[in-house]
Amino acid sequence: MNKTNSVFIATSIDGYISDKNDELDWLHYIPNPDSIDMGYGKFTNRIDAIVMGRTTFETVCGFDIAWPYKKPLFVLSNTLLELPESYKTKAELVKGSLTEILEQIHKKGYHRLYIDGGTTIQSFLNEDLIDELVITTIPILLGGGSRLFAELTHELKFEHVESKEFLNDIVQSHYKRIR
Ligand SMILES: NC(=O)c1ccc[n+]([C@@H]2O[C@H](COP(=O)([O-])OP(=O)(O)OC[C@H]3O[C@@H](n4cnc5c(N)ncnc54)[C@H](OP(=O)(O)O)[C@@H]3O)[C@@H](O)[C@H]2O)c1
Image 1 (cartoon, rainbow, N blue to C red):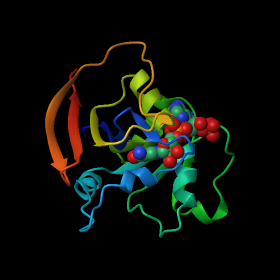
Image 2: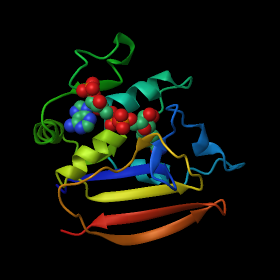
Image 3: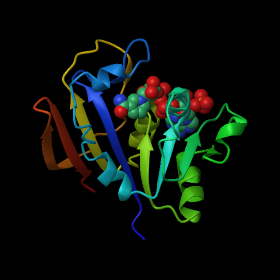
Image 4: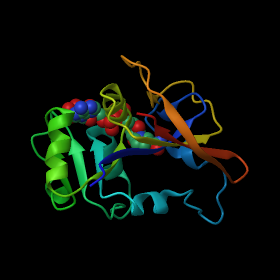
């Protein structure tokens, strides 16, 4: 079975995934009257499970909406001892090295993984564990916040698969890691 780790994320032009106040409302500032999903549904249909950093998990838990995920969710945290009671049926806590975590998730039969959260994506990239990046750029300069990318120990080359434009203002670029 092909094992892939994919990123599908929205960023500001200056590379931030949340603003200085840890808010995400800027993601939706371009009017989207028909609520097009910009490929998110298609993307999530081809993944088996989600691996998410603790900060992103807590952000999602704070949204006043129904649980948004249909796929199994694994939360990375080395500080949480357990997930809050009401989330124990929705998500599973995982800890250890990324190699150990991936082994654990693959053993459960989930091979195509959606990797989410800034620090989490950065640590996967640092170990060259990302195969695919789908980056949606919102036309805004935030000037600060949580970064999508950080320094890497090695260069990583990607090939461009395609780019799409949505709502006249949003560009989405799809890259695959060249190995
Ligand atoms: N724009 C978008 O599309 C988008 C998408 C996702 C998230 N976001 C936002 O971006 C922000 C992301 O926060 P963040 O960058 O702090 O990241 P994060 O990746 O969501 O969470 C980082 C936390 O994950 C845990 N972790 C455990 N093992 C790890 C490992 N090997 N590598 C990395 N993390 C590990 C750590 O928690 P412990 O301290 O508990 O060990 C770490 O503090 C949030 O505000 C979120 O809402 C935006």
